[in-house]
Length: 460
Ligand code: ADP
Image (cartoon, rainbow, N blue to C red):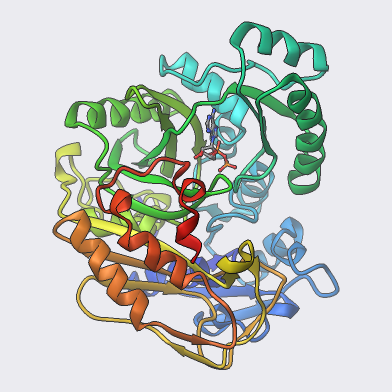
């Protein structure tokens, strides 16, 4: 019998911690925040029923990475479950194991599933075993340069060097010549070591101007698994997503069905549970190739929520309690119960200056006024007049998700909403996002991953 959670701790900060608290409160669950010394004035702390300082004397990032401290605190506070959000400990199997040992439910897949899918090299093996096409690449991390040169001889250039443990576009290098390959191996390894504590890198054939299409999946603990269609995340800067939307305008119904079924094949092969995302690249001929699984909630999940009307974070909490997808609170008895309506898109508003290479900006928000109205959803961390933007964490200020009956209508709502923002004191990427919303290639839904680079006029 499922036991409802009474108390849930969010092992995260910013907008995703608040997103988790909102879902819990709606489900009648008490919420517990953790915060670092640098975050003592951050909004997520005040949006929870209780808030506890962690990581005293540690570096700002490390406060949210202290497995023992967080699990001990959760135990002391008689927490039933921990939601890891995204980033930080969300994909760390040692954290989910530590939760389990302490008798606390980790809201996410098991440590075993994280190990089978979380690492890119492992994920590729799982995809291949499930009969899903992967980008041609090396089956294992590169130990000696000669292995890379042999791969280059067999497959030709360009090649992309990728960190096995990579995320957020870091630890990646594109090589178009042997020299770039050899040099890229060195720099990718050191970037991967610094960012992920793991220097392992592998190679893939670099697909020119692909689309990034990813499929949202959701499974319960009783073997039921569904997909919630795709998101198009092709609008990227330095391999990092900037604007995401759904449905993709680039897929035929047949392609959509094939990609969603391939995502489910991989998920089924590990009996996946909870929410996850299976990412693919689609080349210019329309072939899709698996790239990785993100075994957690993603930043852009709001887009899927908007077109399906399904609350993914609540669903995560409910399945972690042992509920079935078919239970009335989740209400997904069959795949067909998930229907799409309209089009949604999300912009990540960051405190970055587009005119200065998107360098992060800091300081006090002297003024902050946000948009509203039909079709607008905001998910913000510390976005309010007087808030202090520090250099300690990522530069996401607020996520805005808009909805419309067509892609263009959703873009017009976004454009209007971006114009309504008033942010003073700190630079943002809002004017850049407005330019994206008005761009004909974007409005036709035809962007590939080279879009921003190919259109420098967007920066004006
Ligand atoms: P991360 O985990 O760092 O986000 P991903 O593997 O998800 O890395 O890739 C991020 C982005 O990098 C992709 O959306 C795509 O734009 C680019 N990319 C990754 N692999 C390839 C590839 N083989 N060919 C072309 N672009 C790629």
